[in-house]
Length: 238
Ligand code: IPE
Ligand code: MG
Image (cartoon, rainbow, N blue to C red):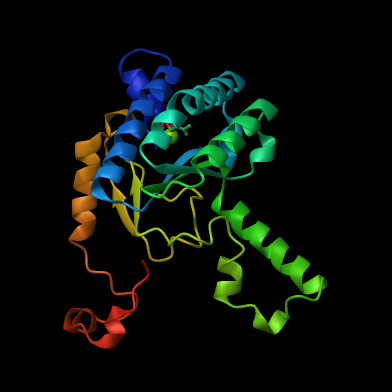
């Protein structure tokens, strides 16, 4: 969700005003996801690298996170949205961790949309943690090193129960992944827009989804194989 700071700067306002405005886009995109039947939406709210920002901005982001949890969770629950936070949450203030746990508990049975907010998340952190888990399982004797395949790694990442991302959207004109879910995005379709996150509304999101729907996903096969609908081409990834 990139471009909050620039959105505010364009208006001669502090960067944090952009973060506040960005919450509206979060709301719009979540509601549009429910409306369109998107099964899973992951929002990259705060990366492991964002701690390096000025202390005051980090503090405001934490407060915003708190107040969004306070203000939005009921609405999410009413919309049958299941909220989960992925990332190293131990680094967050304890009060925030408690609120996260409560929100996850409250919405745990909801099914319309899996909403994941990546906070203090990094794709490399996720893979390194999976490696730690693999080693622990090998050392405890429950895993044979020769049995370590892609599935063994995948199952130790942050959200093994969810499908891999089909579409990756980056706002704010940047064309990079910036350590977002790396392993799981191996086959994600990439979509870049110059719109700043606070300007990314339901219509803009709809354009991204429509663009995605027009793409042909081949997963290593030929376009002819995919088009011919032979049994092999039924092999999809979600
Ligand atoms: C994204 O907006 C929000 C967070 C990373 C928390 P930015 O803060 O990156 O906005 P720009 O890129 O400076 O405009
Ligand atoms: Mg940025």
